[in-house]
Image (cartoon, rainbow, N blue to C red; front, top):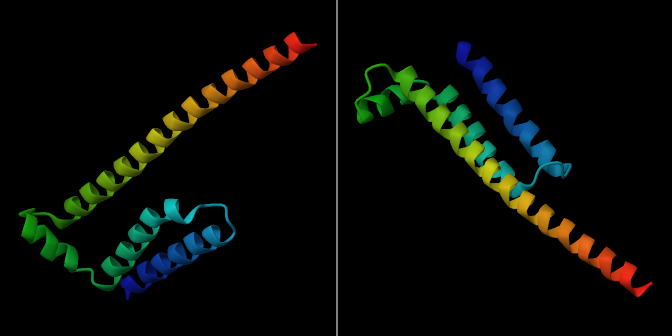
Amino acid sequence: MNNIYFIIIAILCIIYIGSVVRKRKFSVKESFFWMVAAFLMLLLSIFPYSIDFIAKFFGVEYPPTLFLVFCIIFLVFVNFRNSKRIAEQQEKITELAQNVAILKEKENEEK
């Protein structure tokens, strides 16, 4: 019975991610990992004892810790991707600002 709530939450997450992508507020490429996470959440809510099987496979005694480790790894990965993209965009912004300054200087020289 408790799994029904988690199934509903997972389905609402999938619908929300899909609607945000459809409204073009989030790119399909960026939403891929969040969709994967939402589908994994749905699978774990439908088959809650699958985490026990996975934990036994990895030799973990307490399955919820394995789940938390997977969540932390996922969030660190997403954070790294976002940090990488921010650094790339900062470089592009700096280059564009320099180009604009050069163009303004050329324009001032022509006058």
